[in-house]
Image (cartoon, rainbow, N blue to C red; front, side, top):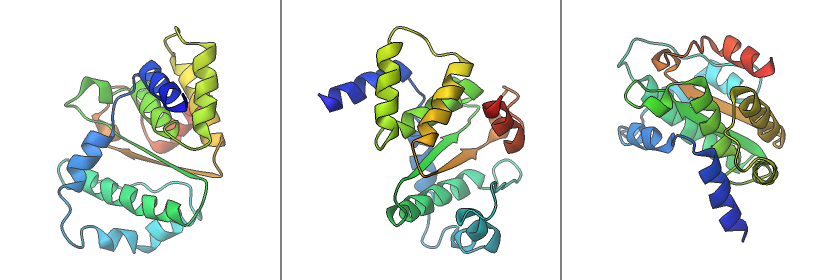
Length: 180
């Protein structure tokens, strides 16, 4: 029955699937890909929680998505040793309409958070209350914050903010939007 509920919740969210872009970026990994990044002091300080944001920038096509995929893989290993850590990610892309807007991002992040762990119950309760309701931006923000709050630590990885025609802006603007 619990698995049926999870399927219903995921269908209700109808979130874009970030795992497809992640898998294609991971396929480009070669032995040693991006190891310089995961051993780089600013990255290690960020992962340890000493800084709140890590911003990687570069020209289009320089490999930022591959870097993000390596970061995500490294964070999954980190989670194995660090308990109740939520790791969620989203790849914006010009090539898919459902991976361009702020709401698409929120849906994708929330869907990942609700796949398992403490956020799953939170999403199930929200689904029961508003089964037929299409979620608006403010509701999605509240859901995101409540699902993130169900974890001891939450790490969000976003790739290609510049591929969103929606004015998402910098991470600071993005997370300010979440707080508003």
